[in-house]
Image (cartoon, rainbow, N blue to C red):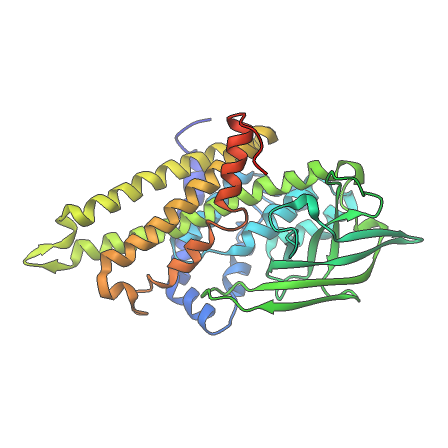
Length: 385
C-alpha cells in the first residue's frame, strides 16, 4: 500500500470535488428542507461513472474498488453533498451481487446500480434484534416455485427512491442459536411489501423507513449466492458499509472544518483575525490531525478489502468507522463554536451538520459495538455480551 495516491485517484478526487461544488451545500440543504431528493446529482454522478467506479467493467462499472468509491463519497461530502445511498446501493448491494450473484442477477442489476438509474436499499436491522444480528427473525420459507418472506425491518434508508431492497433474513430451518442468514432481492412494489416513513430529527434528503414483509412471494432466483455460505456473503457487504460510512463521516468533517477555517481567517475582533488565537486555532488543528488519521485507517481498510483480505479489512473498517465518527462529531461541534452565534444560523449552514455527524457514531454500527469488536478480536479479551 502506498501512502501517496495514484495519479488516477488524485484525478478522481479533483473531478468529483468539482461536481460536488457545482451543487454545493446550499442546494443539498434546500433539497433536504423541502422534502426533496438528490436525484439530479445522483444521476449526473452515475452518468459520469462515479457511482459504479467499484463495479465490474463488463457490467458498466469502472472496474475499481472500495478505495475508489470511498473517494467519491468523501469528496461529495466535503463539498457539502454527502450521498447516503452511496453507502448502500453501489457499496453493499453492488458488492454482494458482483461477488456472489448469478450471471443473470449481475446482468439485471449491476448496470443500473453503476449508472444510478437503479437504486437498491439494504435491510438488516430489526426492532427487537438491535445490534444483535444473530436474533434476526425475518424468515424465508420455501415454496413450490421459490420463497415466501415475512418479517419486519427498521431504519431502512431510501426505500422511497429504491426499486428493490436486499433483505437479510434467515431460512426457516435455521433454528439453532447460530446466525444462518439468507439474502434476497425484493422489489419494493412486490405484493406484501409495505413501508412507512420514520420521522427523524435530521435535516437530510435521505429518509428512514420501517419495512413490513407479509408473505412476500419471490422466485428462486431472488436468493443471492449460496444459502449455506450466506454468512460470508453478509460480511462481504458489511465491510464495504463500514468503509463507506467512514468516507461519509470524513466528508462531513472536512466540510465543517473548511467552513470553520474560512470563517476564523476572516472574522476580526480587536483588529486581529480570531484564527490567530490558540483557543480557536488549536482545536481546529487537532481536528485536522484526527481527520487525516481517520482517512489513513479508511484507506488501509479499503486496500485490505480490495486485496481480498476480508478478515483484516473487518478490523480496519471498524477502526476507521470509529475514528471517522469521532472526528465528524468534533469537527461539527467546533465549527459551531468557532462561528459563535453565527454557527447557529441558517445562513452559515453549520448547526445543521451537527445531527448528521452525531448519527455517524450510531449508524451503521455503534461506537460501543466497535469497541466490543476490537476488545474481543484485536485484543483477545473475553466476550462481554
